[in-house]
Length: 510
Image (tube, rainbow, N blue to C red; front, side):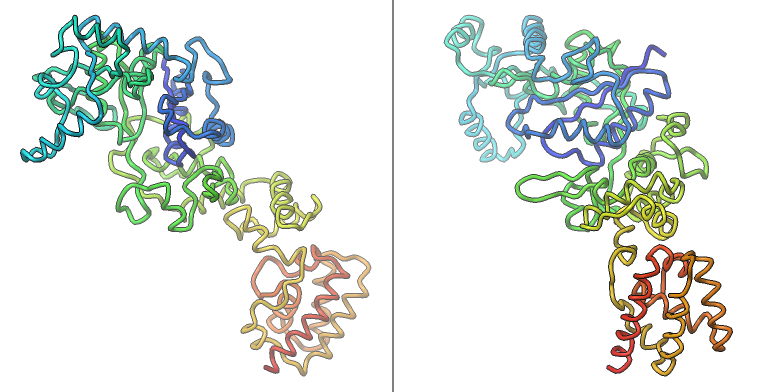
């Protein structure tokens, strides 16, 4: 195989959808597996849809995910520029090549003229008017106007577009790595615009020219681009590049969680989960991202890798390096992949569990600080060890561990009514006093003193531990009770016990 070169070519028209990150990931994995190059190319020729900040967002996403391009904007390389808006002269030159070869033509039809033609076609019962070999003969273009009139119009700077001249009767076979042999007839393709009136190329022209000049060997992209591939092959033929055109691999769609329909950018808001890698702010609203929802990038990468691909084994947890070693285009699925957010949460939990507590600590500090509760590194390490098997995201360390830094009252009032016996309060006051006399405030010492208290008062763990938990953390669930008390601290624990007994008295009296 020739030196592999793949490209990820997003358009900066808004936030990068999670499906776009999956496409980037598959390109990256294939390039690394084959020892090739992973190229980032920004396809920004659609100036009407260009969104400021979108390119920076794309770069941030790739950096966060650890998918670093070998070539691209701000990176460099031998095949730049890597922004299509900076390659206009190149596209103009190749457009002229097609015009000179008779493979393309000037079209001077105005939008009003085309609209009138569409309406006339509808009136005649044809609701699918196309600019193609069957209709171009009676439209205003260089094929019907002749050379002299065409040159006059060009000299007068009459607005025009350049269209590909698609001749009927051609068969287009695409040997897709994922789909197998896909066949189209040229009659299915209209005379697509290659160069717009503003002098910028359409996606189709720029895509083919750039892939050829950048020596791209494999085009790995979403299934939605499969119908356009017939046009692209016809363009390769028109340029005389068909023998050197890249291999194609069209990835399966990402489907909604119920498997019905393509996952859209709005589904996250409607269904309550992120569909973007990072938060994106636009038009006064924030579209949520995985990073801000508390996901580790390695977990998101692992989750995305399995949305459309499988290794053929039972293994589910893969580091990026292991994914590179295992990835194979032949193991990409043809059918769409359901977007299972609960599976994403499961992946994240596995990564949290596997991460050393001291490595998680800085992230936990950030989460608590963001909620107005700065904590020490030591406490963050403690919280990591106590909660990481009980949470799925970084954000949940705060949601489940607020009691480490703040009094939360009695959350589980039902359990308080069940477990609290006001007549035993004098004994629990004795326990509070006994704990206050401890010189070493450690989980082991707290447990030893509590067990001694229970034995001398004829009480069991089921009578005592729920009360300690309710008073200090608000509920009876959570990590080891004595570890919680150690983390909260002696003075604060004693204060919470006194306050908790009062709250449970009131709850019981209601």
